[in-house]
Length: 561
Image 1 (cartoon, rainbow, N blue to C red):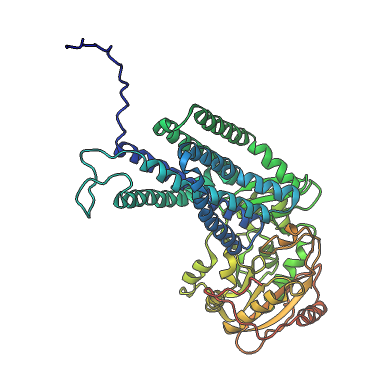
Image 2 (image 1 turned 30 degrees about the vertical axis):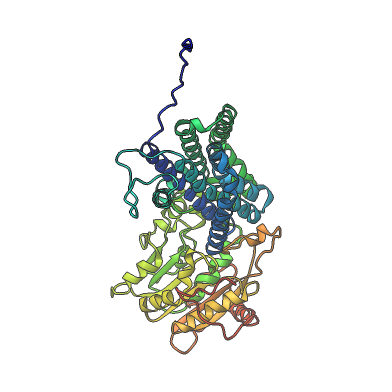
């Protein structure tokens, strides 16, 4: 029996799209890893720079940020395991969160400092959050790129078997990891160089972080929505688009309002009498004061000159050192011109060299009417020569020139601390200064308050003695509250306002006999210093003496106590 033939209707077979070759995906992924790594390092450096400015002690702040962030990156890698099944949407959301948190970190940190006076714990929180998100990036990208099939022709071959490497092979995974980390490290290099040379000088700390966040958000969202869109559900796609658009909206709004924010925050920090505020290549310089009031000068938020009684500090710093030959004088620091003003009051002075690292400070001291009047227009005097250089390196070259011998060297610097200027309180620097001194020349150092920071003060004394000097310690009582040239802002951050009781100085000469603490015969009339005051100033410092302290050197700074 022959059975009838049944003809079935043709069925429509849906052709699945051809798999994407891994090589066409790998390079865009590596490009995004490069961009995200650069952004991540910018966030890291932004936190370090701003924390050093707001809190001080740059070594401590860098250590806190880096250690917390590296720990958090490991934590983020572990947490990323929970997102591997939804790697595409997870990566898009992680980059959106990183762009928001990293982009606004500088803004929030500065706001907390300006209005609440506390920024340490905020710094730790941002370091932790940014580190967790950065740590989750590579595992999620690894999950995504491993799902993409390799080319059937021209693929990498396994070095062990000779056959084309397949997704999941250990050799293939190792090559992918190597590619991702290579792009990550190169991106970090570019981000690390872009921050000090491009972002910081062109955009500043706040705008630079916001722009970096926007770049981060666009790169992360574009990768997911373009290359890995097949791995997204409709809901996941909407979530990634919505979150990243919201982040970009926040960053754009903050960028537009950043100037108003800076002005409001500046008033919160400095008060309502801000006259001039400029960002030089090295620091923020702010001058406050009304038309009838003497100006106050802030450098990176620290009050460096109190116009009401700066004369007490500068008279005590300069005039004891001028007791002897003083035809040639070197001032290290002193970009405000106030120490030069006191030196120029002596008719026997023939040449004054001011070595100031920041040209912006000197420019302001020369052109601002209030500051120029306060320093007696010292920079207009033909005897004054200004050198814009790092004092350590400049002095290292100057000591080999016979004409660069000085009768007096005045170190007009902030209090010693673990900061970039710590090397100017090191034994090596004082050795260079000794070579630059003429026979019988004198060196005077501002070494911080002897009463409040005796360990730091007497460490500076021990360092001078280790460099071959004999020293005469003395201190003068502090004046206007707030005039503290300290290296950090710990008092403000801790919620207290403790002002130093005195300014401590060290007068030194080469040899075994300490210098005489007195005033020169041709000393001009002084408002706050008389010969009888110097004996009390020496006694005041001696009451705080700490013995047996080791000197501070370049490789072993000892001012962090």
